[in-house]
Image 1 (spheres, helix red, strand yellow):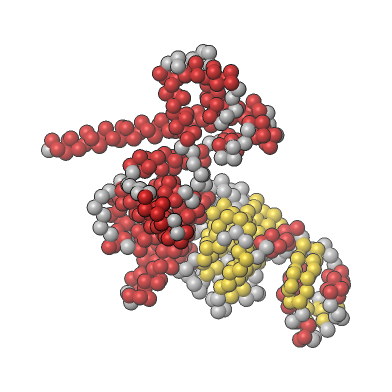
Image 2: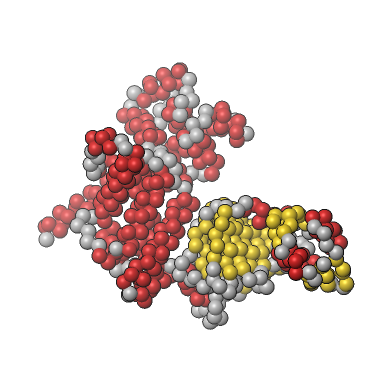
Length: 332
Length: 196
């Protein structure tokens, strides 16, 4: 160790990044020529500095890996239709996404007991309230009013997984490299460090997944072997009965506005709004006039608004009358 | 550690775990390698992804004469050159490209591997240290700007940059000595084999 320049790492770094003064450069030059050891240190530092290139983050590499997997599965399916060895290729595709298929086998469609016995804990957000749940790995989950999240009691060495009934917003922690799975009744979402919203109410005919950040793979019960890869800003709407899936660009933050105890709607039809209101206030709403159902609205409800306020809000954008009796409402 | 030839054999038999290992081992260096030809990081990534897709799709018809690693780098290089050709036709700068003959270059491969190793080492730096290093190296911010942006002193930036450089350099020399050891070892092995 040279006594004249004990903090040589700092001096070299400052020099390489152009943060040195002329006298510091001079000093460093002298230090470098003092010994072969010093020169070697300097040369290696220079090599490191020059060979830093456009950084490839782990998250990007993982994303690309998923893209390759998806592409392989799609191409396998293409080949299969071409050369009639359908079963064989299907089998390869299935092997390749082994863990995914296994998960679907376990959780979707049938209720075959799994070989591993795990006990599940669950949390449910009360009506008219949002619950924020912090998981052991640092993942944050917001649960919309009345929704339930189940999670295994122990830690699984290979994966993180939760089950969702209803609507949840996930901010998956990047601290763990283990893949994170969200299991809903008809879909399986594979995640790597990311933020997204899932709406999967049992009483609704569709599952809506909206990605804010990162990347997720969506596998559904009907399209089991072809996971959809969502990009930030994309929303996938999956129809439970037809298996149809539509992906579109949306303003992702709007779909997680409920986290602030608000329900935003933009160009939504009355049927959609009513479904939300029924859930929020635990009531039943009847539309007397079928013409009303097709009307479109925009606006916002706060969760702390009372029922009358909510209908007054609606009344402001369109002409309608409402009758409330017990927990039932008639609109006309 | 599973060797390349074992990986290749298992992939050709349809072992998807080996495919994943190969991806983790070579994806980053191959991206850096492709980028040396086409100078477009995003395009480099999609090109390398396609090479991996093809590798898996054609795995049972695969006949590799050279090493698995050379095969991958060669494939990436071919697609990079194809890409350039197409691009050249598109932009009608045909003459320029024809004069620019690029050959299979070992130095470039080593450089790409070095890029990937350093990239990995940057990822392993402590968070604060990494943030400062990235701002300095890639956004080319001055120490005073970094200090201001992060609300810390210039002295802290200086110190963290020193730490970052030291750690990265250590990573580099460790991986180099491993490489030399491995080289000696394989030489010794081949001598032993010849002795038999």
